[in-house]
Structures are given as structure tokens and as C-alpha cells.
Image (cartoon, rainbow, N blue to C red; front, top):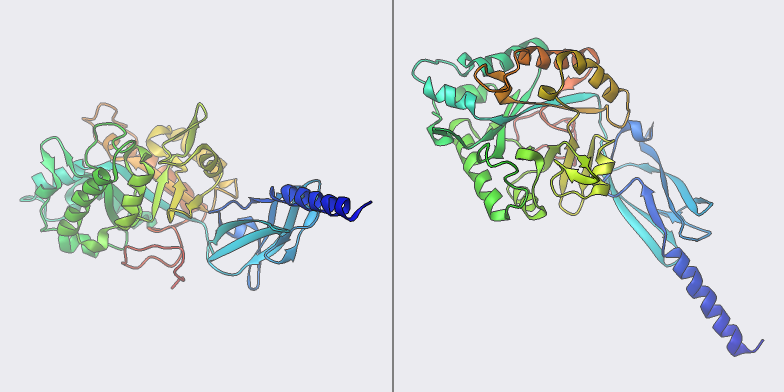
Length: 388
């Protein structure tokens, strides 16, 4: 074989190997995965996990410098997470693929309770400000105080700016000291400007959602105090554009719960996420969009949609799945509490207590934040901060 032919053959071989290696890809864990003790093995210095992926035809793959086992076009390697965030890189010759994963280091079984579409209890307090000496003379808040005293439950109220004949500027600030005294178990945050129209932010501009967020947030600070605000919110109907989500992030929002469902293969109540991301969240507690610095958390139960006798069986299925059981997101809507509401649920209180009693019996602890150690009065609950 002539030198020229030999050189040509070597070039083809090298190019072919590179082309095959270009397919190297990490599949587990995906970018943005938030891992806890159920996703690996706790070791003295961290969380031991298995990284898996497609080898892309390569015979040798290294993961963060560690030689992976390659078989049948797939690779896997063991590594230990020691930091809150870790960049994992798979390399096969010149080809490489990286993902960023997070470690929920001090994870434990916990639940967060939020209520959506809130405004009527605030209207009642405003209308009765001359008579109510306490916030908790309002029947709705009185019920939540009862749950707090009995079970230690902590509650976030996602609120509107206005409803028929009332907006938050009419909410008196005379109860501000009482709001602050209860800041260890209560939070208030933006939900939407109003109940209608439906899906108000599914196509909304960043300017629209930012303006509505500021309307609500300004009034919360005025009548309740900044200490009551949260960096977690459920946007009405769980839908935003990516630009809208960025606007909320710029305002301080860091996490957004949602249903994360697929309807006819399309994301539903899933903000701006695509089908692949939603499919992952359908079987997980949480996931982070690392590009937008936003954490998404799956609602485990919408209590007003589950009959009383089915609440425990529903939650039993959730807690039986280790990938969904560590952080429970419980939610109910305000309006079903009221007898004059068209879809009033007479067993509203019983449904809520049934869910809380179940998670308490299972050893779950109430939290206002998603990650351990963030129960002080700061509005920030970021994963990166160390537990106190």
C-alpha cells in the first residue's frame, strides 16, 4: 500500500471514529436533575451515583476522568457527588457531553402545603376590619391556624390582586404586626392579577406578568411585611412563556410548582417546559432548568379534585415511589371552602386534614421551603445555601 493510500485510510478511520464518538451522551442523570438519598448511596463524603449514557460507538468513555464500563453501545460509571452542584462530563476522544446536577444534600421526608386562587379571605378581613380584632377571626384563616396548632402545618397563600369589588389596596395594614408574628408558618405570594381570564399568562409578555407580580408584591409588603413573601410561586393555571418566567426570576422567584402533565402528548399546566422535560418531572419530585436558574416541583395532590375517601390511597401510591416520596407538594384552591361557591365542597376541612394527618403519620415534616435549613424569616430558600 502506498504512503498516500495509507494516509487516506488513516484519515478515514480517524474521521469515522470521531463521527461515532460524537454521539456520546449522558442520559442518567439528565441536566438539571436534583438528586437525593433515594438516587444513590450515602457515603462518608457524599452521594455515590451511577452515571449512564450512550457511547456513540466509542470503545472508551471517561466520566469526569473516570474510566466508564462500555458495553452494547452504552456506558456507565460510578462517581460521588460532594457539592451542591456538580458538572458531569463524559468524554470519548474529542467528543464530550456535559450535564449539571444538584445534590439535595440534607434531604429528609417533608411536605409543603400551598393554597391557590386566594383573595376572598382578604376581602372578608378588609370588610370586617372594624369588627375583627385578629386575622384569625376570618373563618378560612382560623381553619389554617387550627391545622398549624394541631399538626405544625405551614401554609403558603398564592393570591390575586383583585376580585369583584375589591383589590389589595383596600386591605388594611392594621394587622401587619400579627402577620409578622405568624411568619414562621405563613407565606403570601403572587398568583395572578385576577381569576379571569383563564390561562392569563400562557402567551403573556414579560412586561405583563412582571407588572401583575409587582402589583401583588407591593401590597403584600405594605399590609403584611416583606417577611411574609416567598421566592416560590404557582402561577395561575401553571402556564407562562419562557420570557415570562425570566421576568419572574428577575423579580426574585426561584421555584414554581405545577401539575406537569401531558395531554395528547403536549405539556399541560407545565409553564414553558417541553414534553421531554415534563415526562421526566411526571416521575420525580423536582427538576431545575439550569439555563433559567428555575426549579420546578410537581404537585403530588390537588386536594379539591380528590374525593375524601381516595386521598389516602392516592398519597399511598406517591409515597411508595422513592423518586416522588421525599418532598410532597400538597395543594388546594381557596374557593371550594365557601358554601356560596357554585362548586362548594362541604368536606373541604376534612379533605385537608385527611391529607395532613396522613403525611404526619408517615413522618413527614412541614416546611415553607423546598430545601433543608431555610426556615428562618428570609424570603430566599435556595439549594446552594448550607443548612443551619
